[in-house]
Image (cartoon, rainbow, N blue to C red; front, side):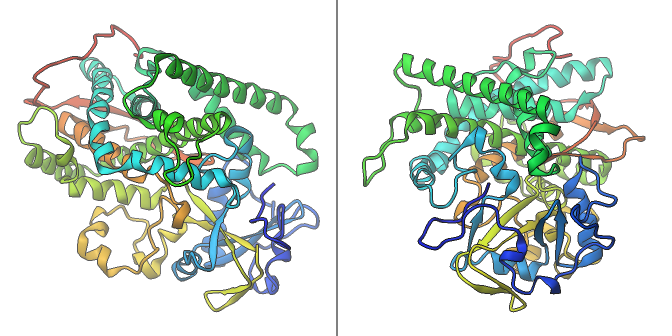
Length: 498
């Protein structure tokens, strides 16, 4: 299970909250607690995050839940979350959900423990891959993948059919990170079913989620068949990545993308390189994390745009004004879509697709001057509730309003109140990549289509460690006089993916 840094005397392994919070009894918990089982009355095993949001509204900014003898502390108050963001006193904690992914990603950037040296090595080797110059180099490939999406949506628009938004956004973001980072094409849009890599990835994420809802001693018995499927899913992910790396080595290198950096770049001071096993883990980390969360962010944004035609019209007018009659936007033009970016940020506020992060105390301390914590004690920050704290976001925090992110409003808010990418040194390394990709795609789709929602649809959120709108379908309608690329390199794919 999870570990704290391995200094002498440092606590190791999973730590139930009563071991790290000396005054735990002061922290409220749900009513009707059952001996041994804990706070399980009324919970839904498939939506643990949304259950926690419900308890958060009832119990306040710091609360606890107990399940099968393990006690957990949750935090969502803005003042408490800001204190946990203090890097001098707190560090990333690899919580249960993330630790459950270690059989898949090991000491990759997202799942590494703080004491594991490969995290710092990989971060320093790969950070230049997200520089401005590197991002500008990825832009044409992002456009190429987006063309494949619009080909698919054009065919749907021509026949009046609705599109599977989460499914299509998953195809888009997988192809984008695979092409830009690793020079690989999964041919997602040429398939009528999800690529086997996506199926295996969803399987591992779902299994990791299920492990959190089953008593650890009973997991081998209750999840026997699921455990076998998970082992097969991990084997498929490993095989896919091993073949990708083998092909790259056979060609002698690519165009300086992330995979080249992983294979060829040495640490500038120590000369150390990433070991082959760690390269595999980093590739899996980027392929999974680099598309799963962005696809969710795009899907939620498209849902809200379809439900708020006045906001969609304002965003579309900005795209028309900023991009003009340019067939394809240049890299610099994407950052000028400030209102479109606000739409994306507001979607991430309400439904951050990575919905929680954990922090642990580096030394004995007191959280926000209220709750003593021993070294190694940890808390889970519920990001969707942090983003709904009425003291920061107002009494209408549930309302979708992109103007919450205009420059004046952002300056008026305290720091550490908007955290869709985590916090501190271990925050998402690919944040700017994801934001550029998502803003570009929203701009392209708004420019090309009117988005028609199904009036009967009600937002349902599915959880597989990340969040995604379930069953979201929209009907795209082509706008007139949309500029087309001067040199159309798109490949006709009759009927593919329909």
